[in-house]
Each structure stands twice: as C-alpha cells, then as structure tokens.
Amino acid sequence: MVTPGAERPIMTDRITQLVAQVGRIIVGKEPSIRLAVACLLARGHLLIEDIPGVGKTTLAQTLAASLGLKFRRIQFTSDLLPADILGNSIFDRQLGQFVFHPGPIFAQLVLIDEVNRATPKTQSALLEAMEEYQISVDGETHRLEQPFFVIATQNPRQQIGTFPLPESQLDRFLMRLELGFPDRASEREMLTGENRRDLLRTLSVVLEAERLVAIQAEVPKVHTAPALLDYVQDLLSASRAEHPTGLSPRAGLALLRAAQAWAMMSGREMVLPEDVQAVAQSVMAHRLEIGGEDGQLGGRALVGHLLSTVSVG
Image: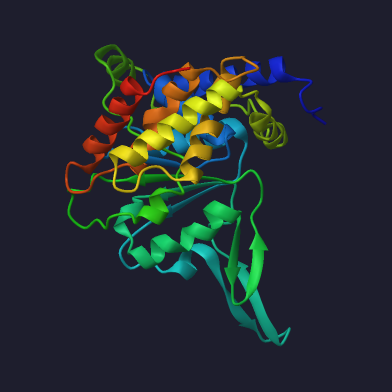
C-alpha cells in the first residue's frame, strides 16, 4: 500500500523509468513522451493529431504495456454507433430480463483511432466517460475501472472523410500533441534496429496500476504558491481579452494540474512558472483555435503571444 506523500522520490524514479522505457520504442521523442505521461498523471486524456505512420498507435500500446493496463482499441468510422462503444442491453431468455454487455470503452487505456472519422453523434458518446468516468445506458450508470485514460488519434482536418471535433469534445482532452517526423539519427535507428512490434513484446511493467492511481492522487498536492496562481489567472484573463471566448475555468484547472504533474516528474515539491510554460502549448492551443484551416496554427501563435506578454510575478 502506498502511503500518500511518503514515497515521492520512489514515484519520481518510477516515472523516470516509464519515460525511458517508452523512449526505447518511440525513439527521439522524449519531450512528447514526457507530455503524454504528464497528461496521464494529471488524470487527463490525450489527443494526438498527426499524419499516419509516425507512431501514434505505438505510443498508446507502449504506455499500456509499460503500465500493465487493460488495453482496448476502437477504430472510429463513419458508420460507428454509440452502442458500439458503450455496449448495450440484450434480452436473456434464461434470465427473462435484459442484461448489459459492456462495450470496448470498459478498459483502462482506450485508444480511439481516427476519432474525427466518426460522426459528431458518435463522438459525443465519449463525453460522459471522459469527464465523469462512467457511462449511462438505458437509465443505468456503470462506473469505469480506474485508472481510465483515453488516447485519441486524429487525422489532419484537411484529409477527406473527417468530421471536426466539437468544442465540447476538444475541451475534454487535457492535452493535444503532435509527434512529427523523427530526426535523422532516430530514423536510422528505426530503420536498422529491431521491429517496434517485436520490441513491444519485450516490455515489462514499470509502474503498476495501483501505484499509478496513488501518484495521480498526489499530483493535486504539489504546492502552488499564490504568485503561481496569479500567473495562471493572468494567462486566463489575457486569453479572454485576445480571443472571442478565451480559456474557461476548466481549462485553467487543466493547465494547473498538468503543471503540477510536470513539476512532480521533475522531482519538485512545488510548481514553478517554467512548469506552466512547459505544458502551456499542449493544454491551451486546441482550446484557442480561431477556426478555419489555420485554426491550429492560430491557437499556437496565440499561446506563444500570451507566454511572451504575460509577466511572471
């Protein structure tokens, strides 16, 4: 049993091992891996937007294997229905009643592949699960097992056959990342090294589910000084002055939790402005998109502007 607050050094060591092991499979992407792990520790959900073939699915599989989590993959398509995700009730003749059959959402790490290829109705089936860690079917509520972590992949929106994610769905993702192409040395290692799928089978569990839940409970306890909270609120206020809607209070809480997770990963007991800045683009940009084809770029540019103009302290 993990004693709250008593094993911070051990926790940090396990997190470091996790990042290192994932880095053996997803080579040359340590900053993105650290952000993905911070998202997990903050009990958030992760959206990865990138072209096919850069390791989005492999990252999800590597995290699941390294954490020993129940893993399910759901391929989103235009004809997918909410019941295909959540499950449904089927009449049992022997029992003489309807029996609920859980869908693939009942796992601990769920990979939603190509989330923007499903219709908005199907996308909305994820909202309750991601926000409240439960689903409701036929008037009954079913709790999801903890830890519960959704990683969704998204094709670039200019590709044919995609539906835009509504703002309410985007806001459920604590972070959005891009993996991008590897650098030349990392790509050479992939070309000449062992197959990534074969390497996945060799991974061991470095952070058990029970310990992960304990670490997640510790994240909100990482100290935030009043001056740090002032800085976060100043960023929120500035975003509302620069953007038609700006960042919501929920976005502010997401930014703070991600910064606390980043500080814990760095072995610190308190959050620094540098921690907020390290996670700001991943947490804020997708919530500040201006719209149109350049929306994502506009969101990033706005976050960069906020970080450069809002003073620390």
